[in-house]
Image (tube, rainbow, N blue to C red; front, side):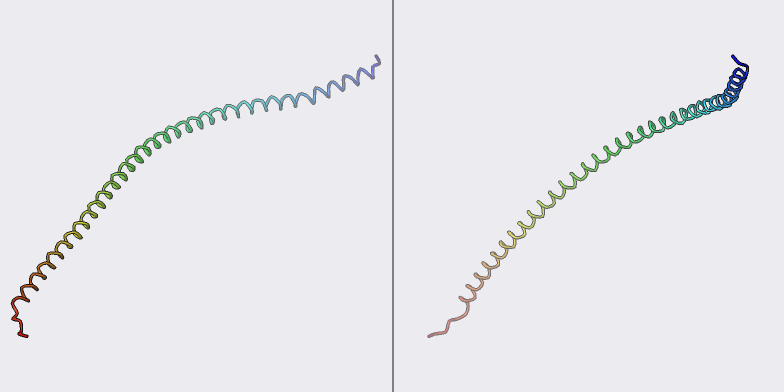
Length: 129
């Protein structure tokens, strides 16, 4: 092999090594940075997962309390509805009783008026014809 070819091959190899060394060094630094980033992300994701779990537990507790409260409100509303129905029934009965009593009293007054009219007509002397 001629010497010029050997020198060219050596020069190419030296240039190749000189170009690859910084590239390999940068690749190593990038790998370290990626490793640090992944460790940091892992810690952050662990914290996020714990926060999400705690939030879910709080939401479960809140949902349970809300369910109890809504069932109590439903029971209260049902009770109020029953009270309203009872008051409506009492009002209807009272109204019917008042109407019945007023009819009875009106009948009594009418009867007394008729009797008084009858007696009044008997007490007045009749004119001879």
